[in-house]
Image 1: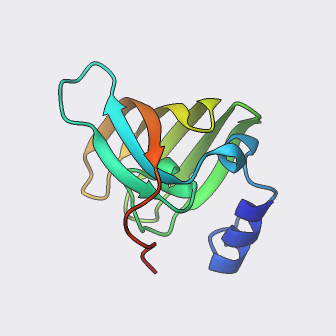
Image 2: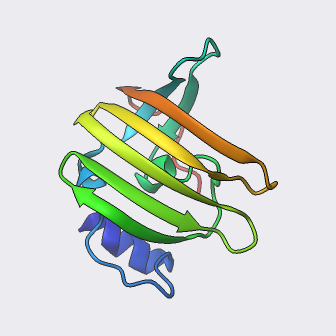
Image 3: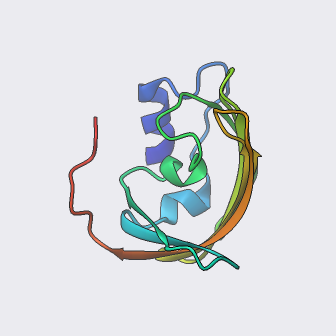
Length: 133
């Protein structure tokens, strides 16, 4: 419910019917997250999550995109998004619990490059910086 209200206030649902946010995203813990790419030896990606939609658009941060929820369940959600002229993506987030997720995302980034990555995400605590407005 909070997610839908935020989307409506921010104009994120323009042209798209906005219902209650996906149940899984409503349960996602806010704060500092560490995302480790499964099968990679690269250092984990660190991010401060103030809005669950940040997890959906990892490769399109801060870009206005139209979103469509494909699958909505208490433990997982799949969302397709299109960023007019800036690429698109499809993300599935599966919650083991509010602090442990599997995030599968694929699409085309704003520079036209394809991505297809699966992360294990762990909430590691509170954010050390305030949200960017």
